[in-house]
Length: 267
Image 1 (cartoon, one colour):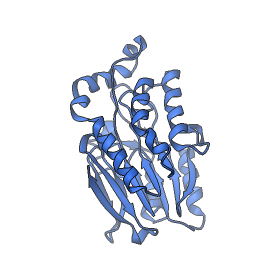
Image 2: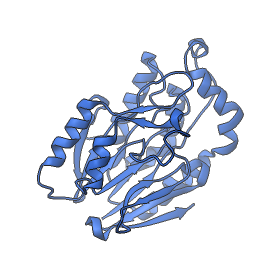
Image 3: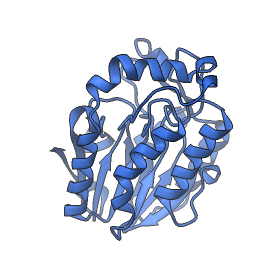
């Protein structure tokens, strides 16, 4: 079994309608114009797609932030780059990030939901999350932690209802390795310093991971890739970082938690 995990392309652009200057999108547009476009290169995403096609994994996982401000044109820009993966013959998993769920404008929400349905296929819809999918001998738990937040923060939220759903699934006998897919990490080493960027409500799910009822968490949001280890040294959280900033993705091989191997690929 091979998983390829990538995240946070952050395709961007200008304001796509005049209302962008009266909601949070102006923050994303400003950030892209004066910062992200100098740091994030979509050409690296194209190289990632070419690499994934050459490797042909059992599943490719993207943990969100396809866009900078959640605008339809941004989704379309990155969709064209990812399109070859749709006809490659292996399944995709895409969980939207906070920048994909940036605002509540109906046309932006529709663009995000259309992308969720397009990339995931198999009738998967955004409103179905949290969702279980069994692919290539792995039980994937797809958890949405991204919702619009206030103007200056990039908070994520895990609702009590979603937390109970995940706990209910984890109470069942584990027949396959369980991999949780979320844009936000479940762990946070610096909760005070990163208060503007952190996830809230994750404690129960993190406890499930610590109890090994969840074998692995795949996440993004933090742009520098990292691995978190259990006390015995095994990895339980894998952050792919930003593919367009670092030019990297992660290959995961194995069919059991103790047999997982991880390799960061420099593109």
